[in-house]
Length: 302
Image (cartoon, rainbow, N blue to C red; front, side):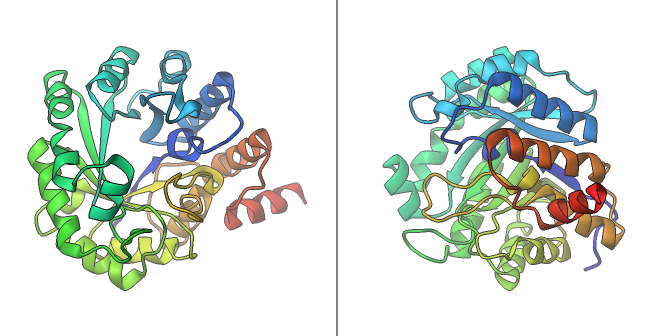
């Protein structure tokens, strides 16, 4: 299959990127990050998470963040909503899209939320119904879709089963997420082709972590399988709190640089994103893990 003419980049750094930071990132810093990302042209920004602050203290200020951002017309601002209480808080905060999530690995589901995959998805029924009643977009994220820290490779039929359940809940978009970054290109192609047999490819996205340096290859494989939506995190910040050694999401700058080289339109300003990546890395005290971002920043500074 030929590559797409354009792709949608879902920027996840304000939520998936920052959630694992041990030092609390000031609300003003989160707002500034989202505003700068909006100005750079992203169509979809994962802005907050309405989970219990006991579990994810970094995300405790979701309502304040949503109240403080400057909304760019046409940009979807998403939030993670693990239960009805979280959804109601997200709705009150004015999010455009609710995000629910479930693992494709039975072992991961049992170890982390003490229930089966089927039970975990069933818990989202009231959230899905409330989202639809409120006219909000609903996105479902399938974690551990390519591998699990407890059971190894995830069976493709498990991923397809979760996708089918999320489709039945009314999800507008379904993420196939390599939470611990173990997937390889051939595996990604197989999984994406299996999922797109039951879900329209235009509604499927790829969410890749770069633990083994395979993210860009995996994105190419996903595009060849008909996928044109990808999740990225500026400067490659983030990880998975439940997967030991799992590094950050694929860096937005690296993906944008690759897309530019392929002649694929993203609508996002790469130069602006390079600046954002350097700024947020300095702000949270880490070096950016984006190779393209660091190289372009060095060239700019020369």
